[in-house]
Structures are given as structure tokens and as C-alpha cells.
Picture 1: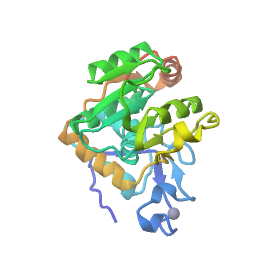
Picture 2: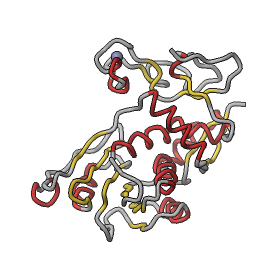
Picture 3: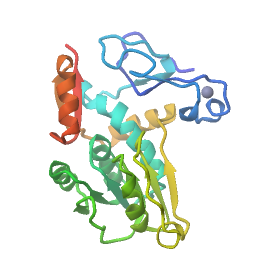
Picture 4: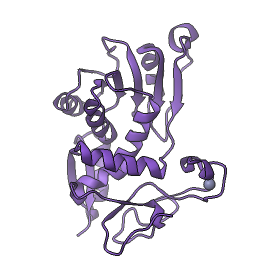
Length: 257
Ligand SMILES: [Zn+2]
């Protein structure tokens, strides 16, 4: 049971509550709990001044981060971190990122800290520019083929058509992690070119509490610098429209004042 103290600064993630007794909850895989509840989906508080959360799902924020920097770590950061782990990437290896929004811009900072070379594909010029700034070894358009085979990759874009080319770009034995909650249909796969060689595809579902704690500890030690653009809560719709249009890179943050 996690204890939090009165006045402690904490953050809340998407996963807000799990049942605590199912086979997933009792084996450290509460992200797969079928009775999970999510902030802003089944429970209020994602867009409000006050929110209720079980203490175990409230994450202490390291002092190195401002409120505005901490917010994207609990959302984009946490799912990116789980995807990075599930990609199986090891220090010094080559990592592919498809789509370069809020999650990927945090993932690249962790992967670079691990000494990985990061290959980024993105449709959006603003996102490609930021990837270069953050030390990508290669930056290309959505359909460009990375120049080297990749040991692990993550698709952040909800675009199923990226799966076959991303598998072809993988090294034998590599893993492709699908980080979106939703993805358009995946076209049929060519077994010889895209699957054989022990390539692995796996989806990424929410996060465990341990993912959140580990990310915040590692992000503070590096330290990660989230690129943020803040909007007042009253302009949440504009923030979402600009996000959809690719109007900014990094993470949009709603500020309550
Ligand atoms: Zn459960």
C-alpha cells in the first residue's frame, strides 16, 4: 500500500483504479485489469481543478520538474516508457520511432541517454525538426526506409499501414511495439519478408504503477526536458485542434489557474 503525505505534490495518470484481486492485478500486470477505470473516461478529474485518486495511483513528482514539465510525463511519457521497455531495446542498439508527437519526444531523450541510435519517421516537418534537435541519428518521411536495420521499433501513429514497412525495417529477432490505443486496420503481412526471423509484434496497454515510478525516477536522473506549449483550460478545444493539425511539437499542457 502506497502512502502519500498531506501537501505532497503528486501526478495522476490515465490508469486511475484497478480491482486489485484479478490474475493481472496480483501479478504486477494491473495495466491489463479488465475492471480498470481511467481518468477522464470513467472517472472525472482529467479536466478539472480537483480529482479523487487512490493513493497508490498518485505519483510523487520529483522536484526537478515544474508542474508544466511533469504533466506530459504522466501521460505521453508513461505510455512511451512502457512502449520503450516492450520494444526490448538494449543500450547502444538502434531504435525506430514512427510518429514523433509528445510520447516520442520523451522516448528519444531516454533512448539517447541509454546510448541508442534513434531513427525517426514522421509526416510532419515540425516533428522532424524537433527529432533532429533531440539527437536523432536519422530522420525521414513516413514512407522513407531507414538506412539501417533496427533492433526495436515503436509505432506511435495510429496508422496500421505503417506495420508492414516497420517490420521490414526490423533486424531479425527485433520487436515492433504498437503504442496507440487505436490503430487503423493492418494490411496483410508477407510472412517471408515481414514476419519470419522471429520478429515480434506487440501492443502496449496503459501502464503499471511500477512503470510510472520508474519513469519519474529515471526522467529526473537524466533529466528529461519535456517541450511544452501551455493553454488555459478554457482553451482546451483549441489545444486539441492544434494538436490534431500538428501545429506544435512536443506536448500541449492545459493550465488551471
Ligand atoms: Zn484487476
